[in-house]
Image 1 (cartoon, protein in one colour):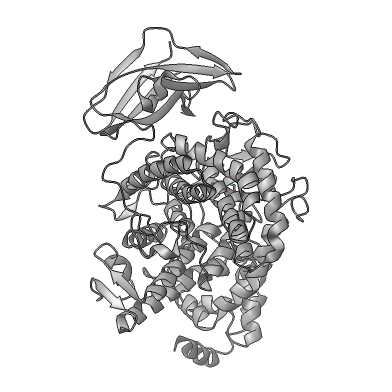
Image 2 (spheres, rainbow, N blue to C red; image 1 turned 180 degrees about the horizontal axis):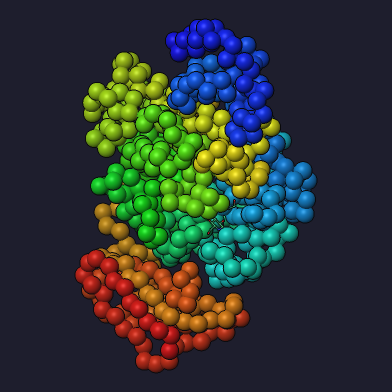
Length: 624
Ligand code: NOJ
Ligand code: NOJ
């Protein structure tokens, strides 16, 4: 109807409906419009710029959706995104000269920001997408890249770096130089999602190889690489970590969730390889992670709080990325793993998206129930704190994943937790289960599809005419901002487009998981109640020197200097960490310094605290 109306209106005011696409100023400010313009010009209809002149952004989106422009954006952007990924992979990628084989550069940008490094997180997420394309048969030419990736990651695992060596925490190092040497500058480290994401990527390749008659390669070559990462996750998951945005050191939902996934699928592979005792430890720690994962839910706000530290609202793309990267199509709408169609994940999606409606100028005028541009988190100020392509694509992908499951199970459940999400599309909808033959099912799933497509449309509107995807686009004008050709942006387009086409990655064992009745810490400490204890110590250090904590209980590594807990220097000269310790317990501890392999203990006597029965506890000390 709106299309007809626009055409009629356009004829009435024909003189005004000139080809606005020719107006350079609009193309520059809204780079994305020109691509749309070309298509719409070709279609002989109004140009997008003309639409924007006369109609609200929401009306434009509706017309764009109806006119099939999303299909054409997906068709034109898919090969661009794929080429964008491949250009950033060494040794022969067009934009990654100097990168070793299989090394993924984050972006070719060398200043403001300098992203010519390889991050374990970005690389693993990118290669997971490529491995899925390979194993599904979508692109069999990728195997050489995948083999290169495995070799390069195995090399990086062994590179000693500021987080440690391969056996003393070095696997948590977030980024390396593209020639596979250590990056030694100051950084938010460790980031403990990396080993989990890397093992998930390699396990998905291993599972395919085993299913295709190459078990020996898996056992002899891939398994030792995977095991290093899984052992790291199994023994360190309960230690503080920088979040995926490299800013907050605490516990982080995305990190916990991807660690849980990695150990779960790692346990299955380990069992298949015949290492049952190792597998059993992975399962035990996966149970503990699943237990801990539940604690991020904020029942009052009806969303997932992304980090335990940081002092923000906690509304964060972290949580939406979790939903898509731990999607298991066989797990239905299971809430314990926050599956994309689970009521908590849908409620969370709404709260997260709504967090950006009033803060970005480019979202003004968009109806409260329509798609909008989203970023990392509302409080973000990095490079201006703008919308991110990969965040907005992730919202679309979560919704497409949900549609895949609702279609497969032939029904959709509205609960009191997801009611507000569904009421966006049907204000009168009631709590209940709607069979696929019902009108409500059709109404809701059609609306969710349109909503999802809307997020693609938002990114499409702000994609420049050459299809390049940077990291961000301006919250005020929509023009690309920050790192150009971000590999992760391109990969996020590919996975969202695949989900839109109904393609789901293989499952990882999320179906039917049950949260243990009580959570215990990772150190096998008997499963009693624990309380989070924050240790702060004022300590002046020289560059390369770090402060650790060890003490009298399992969670403090039983006085072992080798496995002592690394404190974060985020608030230097205050070093700190938060550890779950047994409640109502007298605990002795000391801080230690490590510098060039030399360990220095604090002077005697031991320090002592009595942990409370519940709540939390903070201890402030000064090095002595
Ligand atoms: C660089 C990190 O990559 C980015 O995520 C962060 O927001 C900024 N540093 C600011 O801390
Ligand atoms: C900054 C992002 O916050 C972080 O997640 C990413 O790993 C790096 N940029 C590299 O793309």
